[in-house]
Amino acid sequence: MPKQVARDGRQGAVTTLRMAAVTDPGRLRAGNEDSISTRPELGLAVLADGMGGHLAGEVASGMAVEIITRHLVNVFARNGSGGGASPNDRSPETRAVDDAIQIANAAVHEASQARPECAGMGSTVVVAVFHQDKISFGHVGDSRLYRFRAGKLEQLTKDHSVIQELVNRGLLTLAEARASIAKNLVTRALGVDPVVAADLAEQTLQEADIYLLCSDGLNDVLADADIEAYLAAHGKDLDGTARRLVDEANARGGPDNISVILVRTDARFVRSRKAAKTLQSALNQA
Image (cartoon, rainbow, N blue to C red; front, side, top):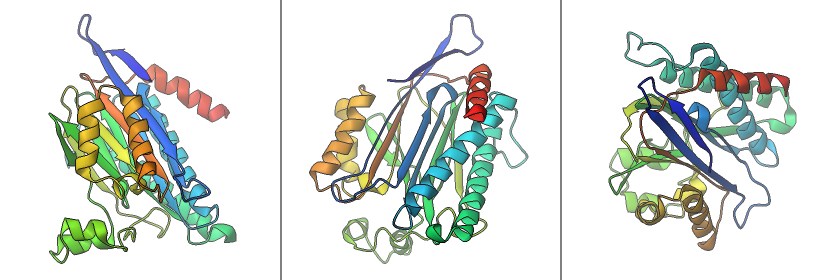
């Protein structure tokens, strides 16, 4: 299991961040249009779920994850853990997440216009950046971020979907939404328009929080109560829990691609600027 150990400036103080990730095509899909990236040494996790048919969805999600990862690595290499908040109270990390999503959106949109085989492609995305005692996150579409804290699971993102809008208006209950055949119709996605509105937020971490990024191939099959039970029973083993969640979704039919990223925070996380520069150099040479 990837593990980053860093000094936080206090004598002898060590911070750790652990991540585990699994992506699987599921039982019914020939290919996998999900893409994921984890960089525990930088406190970065990215997950995208492509759409567009044929190979276009795979292209869109792959572009989104690669571009967002590269942009954030470059920012971290320049700025380390970032400076102070902006006048609107957004940290540098939250602003960087927004910038990365906008850059990826423009690139996917341009490719969809320029390449006939990619016409109409798009992707959801959810991005999480851990810094000091905070998490900054942003998302577009219906890929989700959850937090498991003190035995309780909470969804931190709100789907950009037709069904979620009906729930928001009180026209559907959550139970009815889960049963709907239209639950995968998204109202926002990367690459559909030249500019996209990402939802952004920042929250304070607590020791032993577990954060879950997932594509809808997981939460369409497993209810939140199911996910909560798995994290409560097996959360100390991140790799095993990620695999168990995917296996259980497949056991229940696996109708879609399934991607899971789990992150556990043990204490205050301090990003290594040296690690960011090393990765930046490797990415630039690739």
